[in-house]
Length: 265
Image (cartoon, rainbow, N blue to C red; front, side):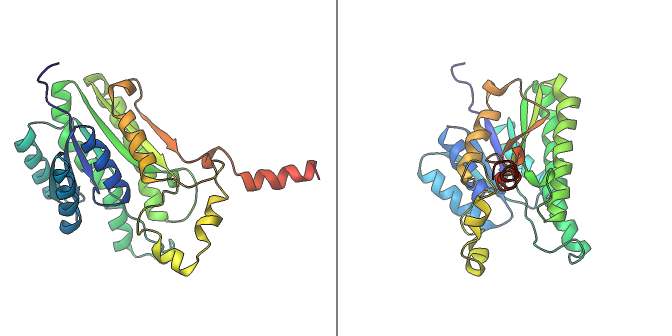
């Protein structure tokens, strides 16, 4: 409709590797984008970059696991743009400690960011979305919700996030709200793998062998799928987590080769 406002999109963890790809993609599409991160300098620099490119963005510093900070965040967004059309719950982090090595405090920190935060964000926007009869909540999940690949606290949180996606979709779907997830596998983001590569220069090559697609994920893979899932073209997709995993959860090519070699020596 002529004169209609562009969609208002809130992205958490906006300054990270996947978050910045999401932010650039939505800002470039003409959306009004609220960039949210815990770290001021990273999100401010991203906002400046996008503003200089002509995008309409704002940046907000908030710990999404904190109820009061989340309330203040969405008050700010509402004051600026009047509504929220899309929330992308992207913020998360994972420790490398095992289940027995991690502390309760580190466990809580990971679960609070990856699960409590999306709950608080959804809780803040759902009343307005229901009143308008439209809105999308997109949760960036992980194959860790389905497969054991370490990172126990993060994995448990992502499994809970998939359940939250289903719950929101079923309870609030009749009011016009969609909830959908992206189950991402290994996505190589700037800086995130530097320490591991320094310890083991062959790590990415070894990990790649497990993927039928023959490559690891890129942040733009997530951003492209997110754009589709939050668009009207995906209007009948809700209550599910779409796997974006290069075929990882479809099967294991190394295992398959070993099994088949017994039948085809």
